[in-house]
Length: 72
Image 1: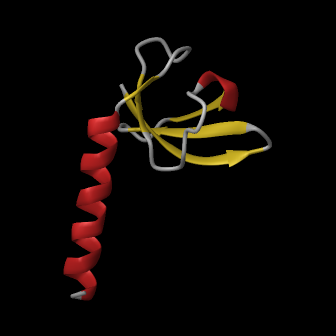
Image 2 (image 1 turned 135 degrees about the vertical axis):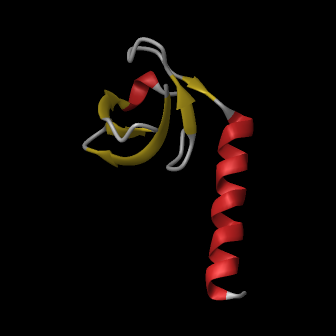
Image 3 (image 1 turned 30 degrees about the horizontal axis):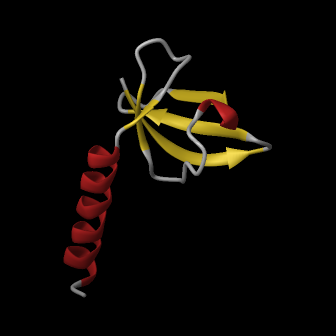
């Protein structure tokens, strides 16, 4: 399952799955320097692997959509 790092609340990372499930995990479970928008893969909801290429792909898609919508 892929999860997007949505926000931090009191040192808890809120992750949203591709199926819209919400996971609250200790921020220390993610890699040092994790930022909102990063994409992680998890099979057991206990460990998370940062997916750099998927993160870049999704951020680029968001920028392209923004430009298309606002014609900038």
